[in-house]
Length: 228
Image 1: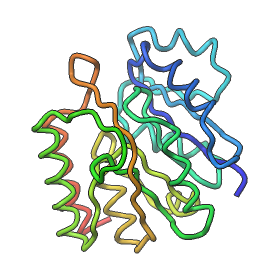
Image 2 (image 1 turned 90 degrees about the vertical axis):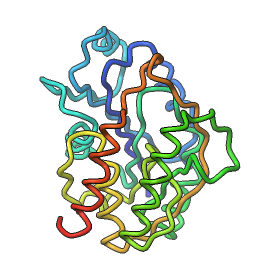
Image 3 (image 1 turned 45 degrees about the vertical axis):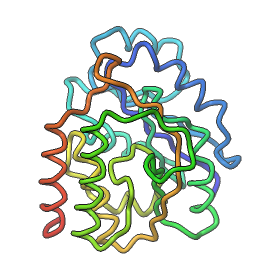
Image 4 (image 1 turned 30 degrees about the horizontal axis):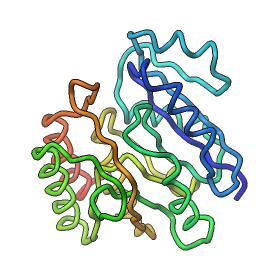
């Protein structure tokens, strides 16, 4: 394997985008060439003004569609052997990706998740309701699909490119997370989890996911258990 594609959905991240790109560029992805693809989901806060100074591929949505739609757009342009997801905020540290993609390089895994809830890495204290929501969604995933995941909703997901490109993604928003998890489990992926750091934001700091997204996640988990 020679190249990793980093898909970065961006929506109104003017204060964090450049720093996250710097972290990505400095991180070691097991020596692989890095292809960074930014998908701007119709930002309106000045983020687009930053792109003139960025030397990476940038794709644009004409209206806000959501994280799942942005990743679907990015996958059409990805040329790497491994594909990973990186949000444009600073909640996750790209340095944590190295052991995840190493498992794929070694041929041990098709998919690797970075768990915020398995311990062993720094983790900012969750809002209690978010912690309960994440644990409940992981439990529901394990009941429905016979898995043992600790953090289904994690952003940090790494895929063998040929594996994820064979999956049709239908979700437009944050329900991408349960949909892709459901479909890789139904394909009997060799899926591993490793601990990652988490520097979570609160709503006042720009966090976008809400309790409503939890409802849609439950619906997606049940829906994709019985259909594709």
